[in-house]
Length: 381
Ligand code: GLU
Image 1 (tube, helix red, strand yellow):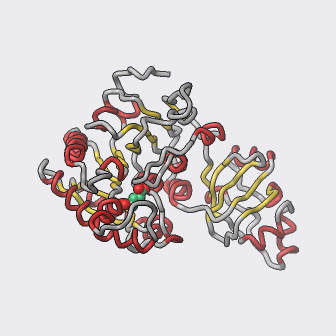
Image 2 (cartoon, protein in one colour):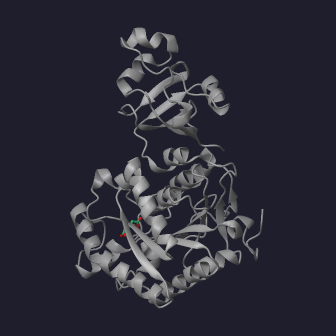
């Protein structure tokens, strides 16, 4: 493990060509005045311009719309009603986009605003469309500046936090690396403010239950995501073959700092390639339920087989045929994600049964697998 004083980034950083950078509201917007932090904004624009000059592709996921808008509208501090945050986002997003446009224009670069709603990554046709648009922008040298379309996103259909959104964007765009600029410089073994023996991890190679247990809450008033949403983002990124970094954005030039070996936590994706379909399944669908499987089925999955009803012990959630579900072991480990061939009702009837019994139980022929291996992305790690 490298020490905090390392003065070079991991080789994965040099090899990353397409990089998604997520910027939280707390870094961009001054809490007291409700204004953008101009010096910081300019410093990160320098960093992105530096990436572009080196032939690398930066994609920004920028929060800040609600934080900016609520101040202009004179909304009270504390949690907002959904309608209030939708309205605040409408006001704030204009200033946010215009600020990015100004700082990039000053560096000879073009900013492109991309506002996404959950359906844009959940529905495959819209997903392919959004990806094509962003690819076109990048091919023309524009810098996509992405945010959730908060003004039309309601409680049921929103990503909700930009940690997850940025992981979905990284997955959708086949990025090499996702950088979460945070108010903390990585994942700690315990909340550092409360536990003096807390230690920052340099590298996380697999998201185990221990890693999940470390995710205390590092959220601040302005940002939605604490460590929990960052770990959720890491799962999505890693499952899609994209590395992820959590590092502090509280310094000027935070991206240059990564190259210079600044303290951070790397979540490393395995090096074997992930097919486009599996990338979508792992990274872009909100699971509607859980399928708990026994050890025999887990072994079968690991050796590349499909999930048969016989190996399923328990189900959760009101999923329908074709929905994404989490595949878990009996001790709660996430084994992967997949699209189910049966809705909860039918699945409940055939659970634990042999595939040859399916037709007799349901009264019609159906697929012999509950989740076909082509419709499955294993967590791999
Ligand atoms: N989309 C929200 C905004 O721009 C931010 C969500 C988040 O901070 O995670 O204000």
